[in-house]
Length: 333
Image (cartoon, rainbow, N blue to C red; front, top):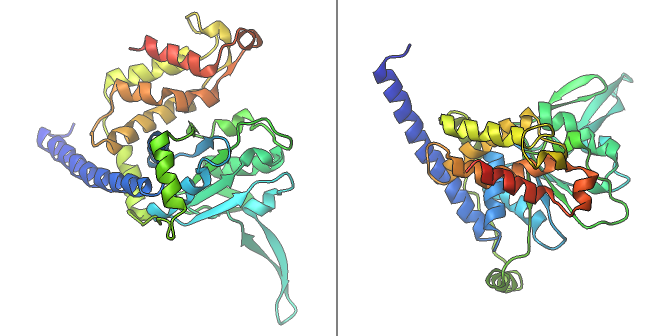
């Protein structure tokens, strides 16, 4: 058992580190806000996802600056960012890379691995639901295990590694719904809505002026890694842990409550892990040293809704996953 003085020193060190990391992250948020207008909640949730070490799925109609947001975050966070435009004819090797046969000057032949765009710190998967399931699944190992296997050889991805994918919610030809296993790899599904009138006015002036505002770097990859390590060290009270467990377990079929008959399948333990990390990251972003139950309530919807599906009867009754999650949140107070 550690002595009280050692525990006090550790707490003080965490507080000092949290103050430094929190200031850097809030500076990054402000820098993103000079380029992305009217999407404060989206920016916060995207930053929380990255602070928690996860991946995010941005869902919104075309023209809402989803692509611009990802590009801006790469610049502001000091990350090596690459973009892949997903199309129906995209192949797994177009993302992961491939081995090519080369012949040396002496006539000796050997295979050489040429890395694909997945070897970046921030990968933007643009319109991810336009690629075939085979190509979508090429990201599964990378998103979960942070390495890829090509021709039997393991290739580690850089650190940090994050995927920010965009998806058009409109039903269109040439789209493939993401399989449940891939959806579960995303820490959050973030809805990108239309900006309000004042924000759209700012967009009009800024994007049509002679010089458009450019993002500036506010952090480095090393700063981000340090902040991610700190997130995992922030203390979590028992009330927050109980709220997470109660919420996630109540979102599964077979649990007690009137909503469970409406749920076909629900979130697994990975959702609890995601929510635990996300509430810590939200606390750090807001300048707090420990999360609260309010953080659980605020992040329940983006963390859970893509990990749930309704029964046919529930859909026939006009129910939605969002409304059910909100009712479950109300029950935890």
